Image 1: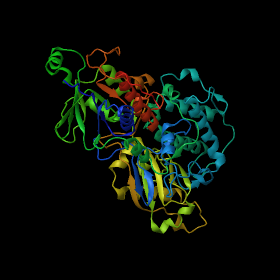
Image 2: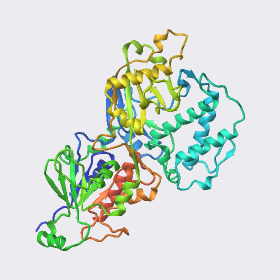
Image 3: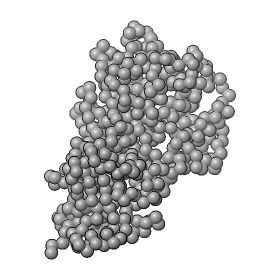
Image 4: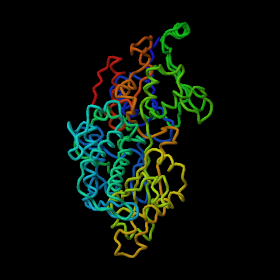
Length: 542
């Protein structure tokens, strides 16, 4: 009897899945060791990477930045593929060169002097540096914080305590603007930075973001840049080495059957089928099945959260969610449940023809809103706009502007039609820019858009959110648990004749680089190397 090749199925053709497939194939193709397959529920590769076009410009619907070029594997691939240069403009091609054009305007059209904005902005920056372990000792304008008392609490609580310390130390009076007092202005500027931080972390509320875990997150050194030829060029490079047919699109998994431990039925299957028995059985939405020796699951944490809540186990119908049979062990399910997974969406807006001639004057706009409870807030501004921090051209002189949304506002955006978005955004930005360049005719300060494009990560059943964070009540240990393969018992000890049946990769399985594409990349390499080492191959992480 000819021994069968191990069947490895990877669920998901995003960064983690294609990295794992690339490594497994390139490390063993000369020996034809594995029967390798990547199944993707959607109609495209890339996962939460989705390069697109809008208003004649290249944009990113999902992942956008290389977060630090020093040591980043994504930057290395982009260099090798010559993806960092393009003859056509692309989103954020100007990098971080907005400093000279940044203006901060408070609701009502009051442009704030940098002398008002910068002290509060520096307080926020220092506090976040302390949260992230960049500074050993942080004070809010010489007001010392009780650092030792911040275990098991939130980043939001720490930030607000820091703001309070700052207010207690400020002696100099700062002028108000219209119906804004000094304190309300500074609170509003601080809230603006909090709202930006929400989009960085995907925590809809910073009160849910764990303070203790922030310092474990590792940043690569160096400049943060975008990819000239699009993030998808990295994905296409990883997939390009795979033979035709390895990646199968439109193959949505609805049920994963696995063998957690030996039992009589399990022993009978092995006895009857011998070496042909494959312990994992995948069910697809079209009713087909696939057997595998090993499955690497790279779906989002949002999909895994839905899977552990899918008690009915209904695998009929195209809209069914994925679930496990039997259910995942408690240690794995509890880690999935504890970790945070938020929604962040991007809204692209193209300036209408009658305002495009002013686009070269459009600033990087920072917006300071009255609180939703304020009686003096502008009623024309919809609630879902009130925690949006910025509006800016995607590069200098582009007619395409961008705003970021997180949490409830991001989900609300997904449910709105284009007309509602156009009306809400035009009313908001026109209000803020009502006095900007006031020497010009008033109609030139009206901001009108002709079309919009939004991402919909929260309601997309293949993702159910954007990226992970360590929530209060969880810890970095949960990220390590996410990476543990199955079957294992509650003490993480293997106890089956067929080990490594289910492996987990994806950004939510990396303790120090979660929420990033390079975290997903590292996790894909990790699981590929785990299997290579299992079959006594040399797997080199690179």
